[in-house]
Image (cartoon, rainbow, N blue to C red):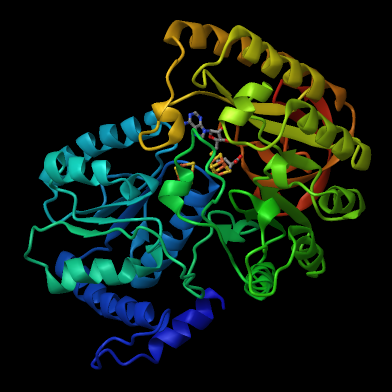
Amino acid sequence: MNYDTIKEEIKDIDITLPPPKEEPERQYYFIKKLQHWMELKKEEKGRELTCCVNTFGCQMNARDSEKIIGILMMIGYKVVEDEDADLVIFNTCTVRENANLKVYGRLGQLKKIKNKNPEMITMLCGCMMQEESVVEKIKKSYRNVDIIFGTHNIFKFAELLSMKVLDRAESKKMIIDVWKDTTEIVEELPVERKYHFKSGVNIMFGCNNFCSYCIVPYVRGRERSREPEDIIAEIECLVKDGVVEVMLLGQNVNSYGKNLENPISFTELLRRVEKIEGLKRIRFMTSHPKDLSDELIEYLGESKKVCKQMHLPLQSGSDRLLQKMNRHYTKEGYLELVRKIRKAVPDIALSTDIIVGFPGETEEDFAQTMDVVEKVEYDSAFTFIYSKRTGTPAAAMEEQVDEAVVKERFDRLLAKVQEIAAKKAAEDVGKVEEVLVEEINDHDATLVTGRTSKNYLVHFKGDKSLIGSIVDVKLCESKGFYYIGELA
Ligand code: SAH
Ligand code: SF4
Ligand code: F3S
């Protein structure tokens, strides 16, 4: 269902009756109530009410924020970038300690803004809120937060907001609604996309892998796949609305569909998505090496729409550490996968995630990681310093590695990654590539910025009429991780 159809559905709802029990009708009911409230507020203030959604973390959170913004806009809020708004939401991440610190920093600043605008509503949601210790800390130290909810009940956003502004308008009490887990997937709520021509599409939620360092399974719950019919219907709707590129999202897309009543493989889903007329490009994230099938690799070689890019997180090149990380593959197994992928799609761009300083990492373990980096020659790599997450098995492991040692290894890895990335990018200079134009360049308004199939950024002369179209661009000069090009 698209935005306009949902709008029509909402029109037909009778808010003099008690709220319906079923979803999404229940949320439509609260959206309508809030629309009425919004009209009165606008009159009272003589202006529009503004909202700001601040997103931390990964693509999952980015997509969740689009859902929240969709509901906010349906209610009648004007979306602004500035945190000096009538409603501010932080959609948080907790994958590494740094992510949490950023949120606390911003919350401190928000206090000052709220002192100036006491009617301002502040909301916190996302992965951090799934941790009890975080919620306790906020209750104690950040009492001006109005609403806290988690990753499992974003669909309830309108209901929670209406509790605050309609039922408890005078109450200063914090509303907290965080669920431990859920089996529910609520479809058919409004979504406002950041780009009109490309979109993320959740194909599954949660994670079952419990890599020993990772908090995601604890804050996102167990793995749940969406029905293929729902995914296809959503993409068809997006394509009608102008989308040409989709990014299929899941923590481990390779295990998509295994737990559905009628099981289906990820490759089969891709085949069905590929058939959608008008859709030009398909990407997906993330592929766990342990579940990457030969069927998928073979399909990559045949597909006309799947982009020449794969993100294949390595984490470590040491068999000993891979086992301690609970990753279920070996260095050699990983390299064999890469060989198969390159055989099927010779010029595919590979990217990865690597953790430095996992408990017990020795110089020899690290050398194995460097060896994989040199052998695979990644087009890009996200490198992370290990961050201890309370509650994960790795947090209880002894032999946490000395900070200075980790920093030194991290710098060596980063230098190697950058050197290889620059070399890889240089290989394509002079080639003509299809580029999906995304936006006017931030620094120079005579340039536009787009992405190649391999997911490289290209800047070239052009104007906003090109945004959303796929054009042939010659890659003239490589700047390491982006190109300067010209329309071919
Ligand atoms: N589901 C994806 C990863 C999601 S988290 C996958 O399995 O590949 C994104 C990345 O954050 C991970 O790949 C890992 O490299 C990094 N990460 C996760 N937990 C971390 C931690 N405790 N410390 C440092 N990096 C971490
Ligand atoms: Fe975390 Fe591993 Fe799940 Fe990825 S697969 S989200 S790294 S537990
Ligand atoms: Fe962060 Fe949650 Fe994503 S912890 S990386 S926002 S799934």
